[in-house]
Image (cartoon, rainbow, N blue to C red; front, side, top):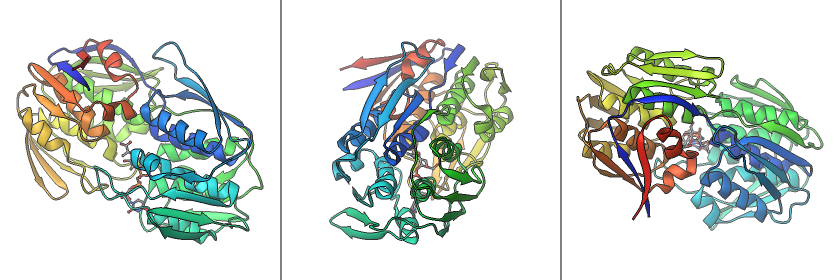
Length: 426
Ligand code: EPZ
């Protein structure tokens, strides 16, 4: 199995192209089920999760063509066409491998009036139930049966617009409600909707496909259902988590990096924290520049929250920075109940971290020492790569398949700005 080897201590200098957002692309791909016409997506990142979603969609009869771009800078073009849906079944095997597969439930139901999709079950970062998705569909008139680990949803007479009030913010459930409502009869109001930029990306793509949606980016989204949607050309938004990860890479390794294609407004909570920690962060015509002059970062406290708060998907990475900061930081994880799996691995490199429930107290150390470490999930694994950039000696990160799920050609992007990083096979 492959591992990533990092030899720390090299400042970074140059440009890193930012890919299209995984968590937008996967839902945009699922939205192709809503129309018989082609949906042409540009700036699609090259990721294992994108391939898994493509495989799932093809099992429903969706035809998919990909034009791979030659360089790192421009994402791939993907043409998806669900001319005829030949199956509405998503197996446990597919959904277990990638939870985002569950997002096919709403578009299949909305277009075909039925779907049978495996319940995802828990994952490394938490239990992650889906009852909000199901109650939203029920509010729109769907009949939901749960048996043998599967959700069977039917709506023979079609879905109907409804007022959906979420008790707390869920990205996935908001997307489920939006996709279902686009083809429902009448008006749907989603109250306490998620405001993540990926929600707006999905909404804007649905609008390009003919949906009637207002309130994107706010916590109240209104959708007037239409009888059918049509094809569209749409460009996937830049990945704010990838951009944030490389911004932290520059801060932890020192140097100056321009994140070309990044959307600075989507990572404002991180940028202000990086500035407090001593980095210079500035928007440029092409993205975002991050500079750290080689001095030790200052400690800072972080609490994860739904957008526009600090993203849980950057919590592990910011912890890697705080591990080498001057002072003590308190990091609170408020979205997922088990998202500190990187802590014991960081400790193997010399980090001083105490965990108490949802709170990690990090006492910054002057130096980390490279070590063999193990990735447990996507964002945890990249935090180990970041720690490796700052550590003395060699860090070997195993279970690299986690990284490949969500970081497009990570070692290529980091080595082109001067990191000593390589994929090694055993
Ligand atoms: C999305 O997951 C992202 N995944 C996650 O990124 C991200 O961490 C998360 O949003 C929060 O920003 C994709 O977009 C594919 P939620 P999602 O529903 O939609 C609870 C990554 O690394 N909840 O907003 O599943 C849930 O357990 C991944 O790329 C319920 O209790 O997140 C969590 O505690 C990891 N019942 C909280 O809500 C429900 O029915 C927020 O989850 C739904 C959610």
